[in-house]
Length: 208
Image (cartoon, rainbow, N blue to C red):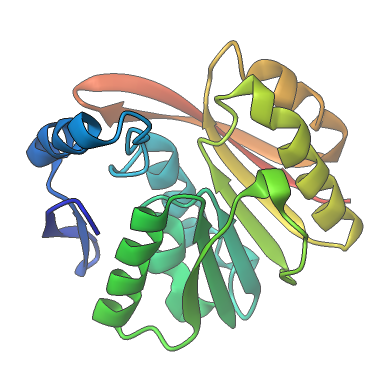
């Protein structure tokens, strides 16, 4: 893991390692100097959508209790790490290798025996991981990724899975959500502070 980390408390006494926020940008710039294709670590912070998804699951534990959970594009993995104690099995995935290394560190730190971290890119995803509930937070930000992600969601819905999506209200992401409207069984919107700015996060529960 290239980024320095610090231990922070999320909630209810649960502490995890996250990249030290004021060191993320300078560390990235150092790496960029030797590798111009180094991707910016958007995964390396606790995003508002992840917080809202975690709060929703805490208030509605039936979606994770005794279930096989798959979180895709997890980044820090706050929802999965927080709710893993209720789940039967948790698979926490991200396409970024550093994110996966940090997830493994937090799984070990928390002593989670029912969780594993994996490097996974839904653009080439083989739909090979069984799951009862799929967790997605802040994933509909890149229109070029919408089609493969929608294909993966459609696959899991056809298998009887529940999909829970938390997303900021972005204009560019609206067509993604609209294409899934016929599966939405519950929706709610919640304001949350992110860097002293109020962000509106919408949450959707989808199933057939």
